[in-house]
Amino acid sequence: MSELPATRVAIVGAGVMGAGIAQVFADAGLEVAVYDPDAAARGSAPARIATGLALLRRPAGPALSRLRVEADLAAAVEGAQLVVEAASERLDLKQRIFADLDDRTDAGVVLASNTSAFPITAIARDARRPERVIGTHFWNPPYLLPLVEVVQSAATTAATVAWTMRLLRDAGTEPVHVRTDLPGFVGNRLQHALKREAIALVAAGVCDAATVDLVTRHGFGARLGIVGPLEQSDLSGLELTLAIHEVLMPSLDRTATAHPYLVKKVHSGQTGAAVGQGFRRWAPGEADERRREVTRELVAAALRRREERSS
Ligand code: NAD
Image (cartoon, rainbow, N blue to C red; front, top):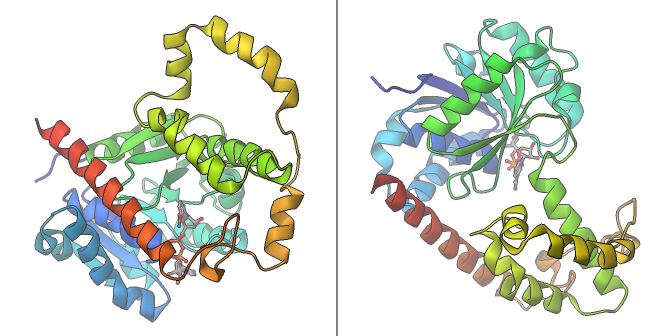
């Protein structure tokens, strides 16, 4: 028997994230049941999980033998100690799912949402026991990016947080505790603060989008996966960060809404690689090639991490 603090989890939603999260838990040795009302999502989930396992050179057989795909929510959550909701990003849908889960599960079962942006408090609005509702924000794809933001709402108990953190750590992920239920948690706040300035620079004609990406990738971005921004400030000495902030802060973008340049792009149909034009132009086939390169690099990093953990 495994030493994990749980033996059985249920995933609600078998899309991109639901299947990826199911893979993480099944590969870690847990019994996993996945529910989705959509037959196509249910039908393709095992093959998508097998593809993810193959990328990581993991055998598919043992993990898939622990996976059940269910068309009935009650059957999926039966016996689960944790339920992770990864359904479409609609607040009314998530509120209904959590009210339903609250009714269908024993009081000790932890109910988690993988929402990208909705406050956990809002998602748990109709739950009678919001103290066991928590955020577990995995990143895409969950089997290649180890971070999970564990989000505590004002109602979530410390015991729920501690148990969830332990299970996620034992399942091989890197959980972090987010103590306040803020939109975007920590990761998306940081990521989109950077995007706000990036868009403002392009909108003002300071440089083009390709230059923003090159500056990021070949400059400070090359360091970010190794040393975080605050650790890097400590290493250089905070006097330097202070001196830079005194000059820079007044001129950074402070647009308090989605930037008008982004709004105009979307409204004029320049929505990105899928249509050949977003912040930059995309040739046919270029986006797929770029996605393959990104996956290759993420897989290499995930394999390196696994090797380091086992050595
Ligand atoms: P997706 O569209 O790939 O999958 C959503 C799935 O939910 C679909 O299979 C759909 O059939 C299913 N669904 C619809 N109604 C349902 C219901 N009542 N019960 C159960 N399932 C239902 O979306 P995704 O990208 O997997 O996103 C899922 C969640 O994860 C969203 O909250 C999203 O914001 C979040 N998230 C997404 C990413 C990402 O990069 N894709 C990253 C982090 C978090």
